[in-house]
Length: 245
Image 1 (cartoon, rainbow, N blue to C red):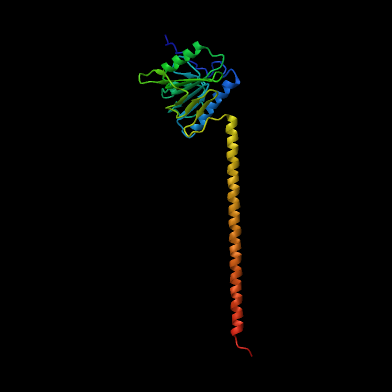
Image 2 (tube, one colour):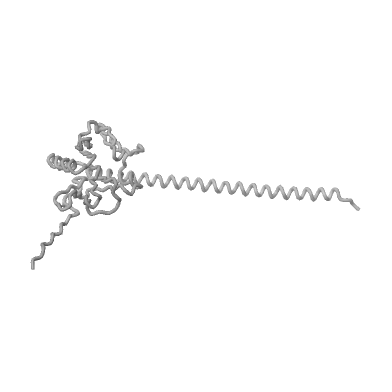
C-alpha cells in the first residue's frame, strides 16, 4: 500500500542570530523610535509596533525574511508575536520601517534591505545614521515603487504624522502634537514631574477644600452667635416691657 508523502513542517525561527544593535548609540535610537511610537499609538488597538522582529512575507519560505529595527503595521492588532508572518496578518506588510545604522552596516546589506522593502510592500522606509547624523527616506509613489524623499531633513510621515528634523548637529523626531520624541530616561523624568504636579494640584485642591470648610464653619458659628444674640435681645426687651410690682 502506497501512502502519500507527508508535507514537512516548515519552522519559522523567531531569531536570526544577529545582534539587535552594535553599539549603545544605535541601540538608544532604536529604543527611542520604537517606544515613542508605542506611546503615540497606545490608544489604537489596531496599530502594531515592534523592534527587531523577524518578518516573513511569504508562507513556505523561511529563508526569505528581514528584521527591521522598528516596524509599524497599521491595521493589525497589538499583541505578542515571535515573528511577523504576513499570511497570518491578513497579508498586510508593515507599512513603515526604520533602520538605524551602525559602523558595521555595509552598503550591499542596506541595498538588499531596500530591495526587500520595495518588493514586499513597505510604504515608508527611513534610514538614520546616528554616527554621521545622516538621514534618508523613501516613500512609495503612484507607480508602486519606493522613491527617495528629496528633503527628508524636514519631512512629515504621511502614515504616522510624525515629523523629522535634521540640523547640523542634531536629529529630532516630533509627535503630531509638536512634542519631541524622548529617551526612556526623559520619559521617566517627565512622568515623575507629571506625578508631582498632579500631587501638588491635589494638595492645593485639598487645602482649598479645607479652607472652604473652615469658612463655612466660621459662618455657621457667626450665624449661631447672631441667633443667640437676637434671642437674648428679645428676652431683654420682654423684661423691659413687662409690668413691675
